[in-house]
Length: 422
Image (tube, one colour):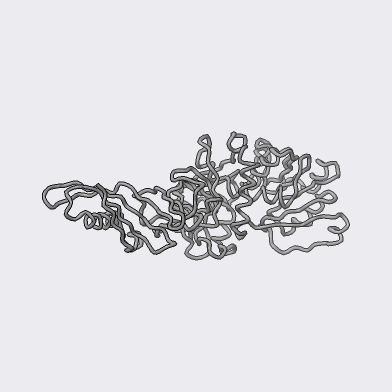
């Protein structure tokens, strides 16, 4: 026998109850009220807000412990969508709070502080992911320093890419299931035990791909694919120059470039890093501390120059990069580590028909990122699923040691991606 009892009392997670046990006790009390006078049975107890917000339904069973006494047990939790009537299972044991890394004030790595905060709740088209790993990227460092604030509406927490398991489906999500292994591009919030992600920005993680590697893919894949192949119009047979060849972006650019038929030249800060870049797949690696990369590019290309430069330095590199470009060459800027202001001779741009462009990914609209995700799923993800494309991994730090991960990134000694284990 099942009795149904519905109330629009606030969902227990919104009651500021500090412990999960208190939430379960609250649910059980309501279930007992629903089963008052019964020796045994079950009840579905609904909590929520008026439409269009989702109800949360708890299915409880009750058994007699003697005259007038019932014991209850939470069996499962459902989320009902008011508009389409769909039902999705979600765990009954989600905590009310999570550990996350916050930035109290701009500053050095030491300002990254673990703290406790309420779980976020997914909205329409979103999912809640139990984070296994979070990628560490240069934009996180810039946000910590106070030079790259999160866009309007984004989580103030750092972290732009995650991997993990879907635990809650927001309203209207029908492309994912509870328990799906995903990695996702997020606009913030990755440095936490749970993170909200747009469902269409979640990429399926094949069983053959470890979750630490999955967390190292979204930010660099989205960035390189968009800037090299969409904004930079890279085509098979062309030559690409990449600065920072052993960074996360650099290693991804090498591998994607080789997959799609490009000759890849990179610059690195030591002979050891040059050797590593060649192992990863670069055709040529230039130690910029030991040689002039402009002269080396001219030598390698026999004076013709490269078709495309992917630059994260800017500053005084720009004029030198233009000297490396062939006629009708393209220059794409994705960061300004060497300075945002430059002096430019537009006569050179005009006479050689050069194209200068650039982009930042985080502030772009969700609609744009969804289209980009579709292209990556179609053109790049099959190489991930086959094992042909996987990130170069550098180091993994516990979430509580996010400050140490930032120190390693700023030291510049890493090769490939740094991730946090959550």
